[in-house]
Length: 222
Image (tube, rainbow, N blue to C red; front, top):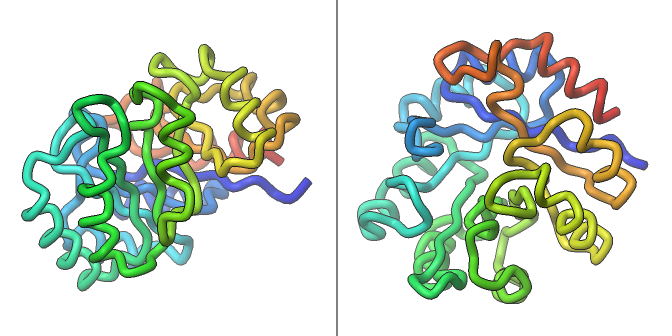
């Protein structure tokens, strides 16, 4: 098996440096975890890009939930973030009926102009997962889908994640991920993992990323 990817959530340059020091392969950069992760400001993007050499994926999300508050403003923000050095992104919207909101997604993809991106955990709250995978197939730049397999987290979604990975879809496993989940997911073919609270002391978002905890995850994955 190839070396699995470890993505770590960072809130700023100090988190990013600590994550890279511990062996993270990629950063997901967000703000405001009280709202489950929103778009960071351009200055933070610039600072993180200057702090680390590993890839940084920037969240495009202007409120908690899975629909944009102001898509026009978010589109303008995305252009600004690209100017600040953002080259990879995270986004994902659902329609009121629980399907992928393709018009909203494509509005931002037009600004991304082929940049790599992740469809985030909106899939875990969709009405029909199979329809989501079908709708996402072929979208430019999409290379993984962050999912726990269930709204409640990986512990309840292991079988779903294993089945989807075995089917060859690009799963980025995260959302309540624990070390005990790694072996069965690796055996099923999952090659990318995402964590945030688990690499902070006591899982607290007000405490910084701990490089030693990141290193433990690196060792578990390897």
